[in-house]
Length: 477
Image (tube, rainbow, N blue to C red):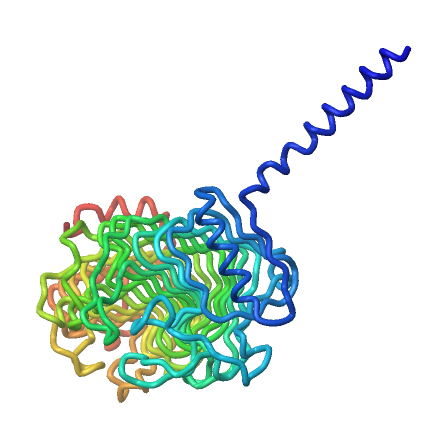
């Protein structure tokens, strides 16, 4: 009997050891609890230990409110987790007391002041909130020649890196950057400065896999991604409510695949989604982009509200403006719902110097410059003439878009406007009447009404696959 009891106790001991086995994994988990004061050193120490522990490590923030200044992390390959949105909150140190020191350009002088700065590595961030409350969260720094006391961004991921953000909220409070205390919420970039004067800037080869899913953004700007080279970017299932722009992908994505889909967006000044190639390199900020294949963009199934002067989607290739070989981008803009809330809006979808863009089956409503317009650089913006060629604008419902053109003296009152720089563009009306003003060259218009023509009855709805099959012979390469 005694032997049986001993064996039973041994078995129970083994069972307890086995049940405790998951705790072994916690050897690479570094937990931080809020102190009620300055948490900068504690969080920095946790990341330093996690980097030393190697790939697969975790920095875990407990529930509560953390107050920090700059956190700089290099080559972290692991998870950065909170206890949940609204449960783990990260604020600047001056959110605790305005008299405390502000954030500085520690670890990244002369470039872009980030509260959290990750250089290289593979970051997986989730389940936390960034809520910047102080009106002046930073010490005075050089914002491209101008003094600033706001944050350049809340979180920056720079260099040859990958990143993932899930269930993270970013909120900017009141401050001195057009009324906000942070310029951008999230900044992902493959560019890096060489000196404290922002000149020159080099483009690193960034082959990262980046994703932003299930997050929320509120403030000045949502997110910007540039310098992405031969990488992938997915922005899906997020909510944006921004003063300027929601998602900007610029200079970048050369040879890359970018998907921006199923987001709820609201922008007031620039646009909900901006695709802008060739600006940083062409503007004298550094060397040209590597000669890689064109990037591929899919902008689909988003719900966008454009208030103030904002557009829904803007596509621009600034390489033409800077007399460089075009960095032609391939983009499909499809199945988005865009509403323009006043006649000062820029438009639902517009393009400048871009070529070969597909605009398919979008629904655009409300009042603005036009539902869709391309090739209008000269009359609208006073910019040099340049082609917007080969656009395929097919099956879009703009019947509930009222184009006033009031922002630029009533230049167009058509729902779709092909300006003087439009060339070899194709417009096919959808199942509802479509009005098109064509000032371009060799454009093809099918099933549309020109402004001077009498109204025509709505066309019979056509299956999109059948429609594209019939159009196959007339598509330009």
